[in-house]
Image (cartoon, rainbow, N blue to C red; front, top):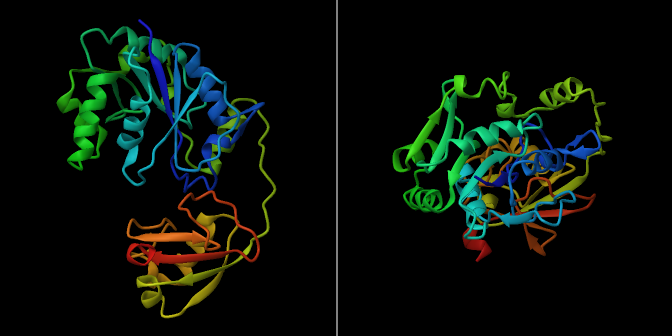
Length: 298
């Protein structure tokens, strides 16, 4: 029985500090590696990205779907990915992009358990693993859309709706004794350790010098900040907004999170000509960010 593969790579990578999809891993980058591994047992492949996200070169056969709604977790990404497959694709394996030690045999094992089930999901380490699971595309997409509509954003809720086969450690230890398929890389230290274990040299980019960025405030952010503008340093949008959150704690809550993410009620304009919330957006010296609320933004 064949299955497609969906790879979610639109997360903010806050703890890593840079997009995981483009992290070098030997002669390829992380996303390229995971696409290659999944493609050995799954076809077609869909990659789900955040709006405006930059991707490395991928095979022409790989489709890209944009998850246009931020802040709703993996269910939203799964919905975008499952909807992008052609109707003839019945089963889909779902994974994150930061699993360089994924074992293709893990996918084949779950697919073999799919007959009679709409969801084949591992349960290890006390948790369900929705981004290492197989979904029957049509019923899973309908169930996910229902959960999103009802604002029930935890993937575990799918086990209450779908015909589910729970897979335990004993069923998978022969194909992946260390369960490395579940091993996510979330921090620079975890990334460096993974490179070392894979026998690869660490590829740390040169640290760019901070850019001086002007941040102007409109509407609620101006009232909260108590000033018209501030200067901060950052090489990316996330870095500048994190510096802003630390420099002006009054903005945390209504406009920014403490981690430098833009709140749903706020907007950011880069140099007055485009709105963006993509954390990896590069900044240059002299750039101006305008932080405003939705009412000001129209």
